[in-house]
Image (cartoon, rainbow, N blue to C red; front, side, top):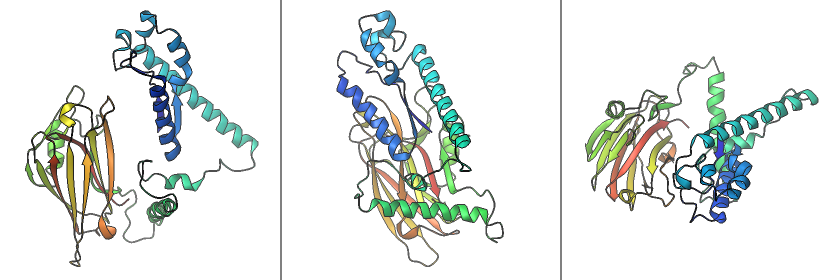
Length: 320
């Protein structure tokens, strides 16, 4: 995964400030630093040239088209980004090879704490004094799963067993890319529905997904756990359109355990943001009290408690 920045200030060059441009660079840096990812900035490479030629439409149109008013970058920007990423890959590969040749170590040293950071957004409410515990718990869960895979003598282990009881994500690279695919997949776990339906296309707008387009829309799901299931992830859209303003989805998770000791947890997801682009955001929720064991169930009740528009593009019920 590479965080790639190519924001030069479009779609409105006349209103954007240098502070806005630098703020976007800062967001890319913070996300990359938090998750331990490579960050590549094409904007940093050519911004000086772009800003120096703002009075030349023939130059700007090769990057953003329509004198900088077009949101989607043109071919010149695509080519520039491809070469920027390729160059940084080459630098990383050659640096790694140089380290291996000059070092007595068998490989490059990796800080194990980095893997523990892969637990969600960097905009967390956790205190600085408690976040290490969250990382360590996550790292332990990951190691437990890996050790289980490596223990070929374990009677209850299936090598290469998938990590999720149930999952799908709308993407042309998966088997879920059309409305009919979403409908088929949702119906595997759907208990009841009112005001939600599968719509959309693989490429043209609107993109395929599970949509609510009326107030108070609701649905209920029941997932039979085929393995220990501790987390639920919901991939939903955030957008700036008027139909997204004030949208809020309330979700209740309920566990049905063999012991009869069941729990519930409530969460909310908003669908609106002010950034002038639409994105899909994963929301990862931990099921209460360790989730459910294999053979037990998870119930999900979702209701649009504010607004009249929402889109879900993926669901996952997983071990970690």
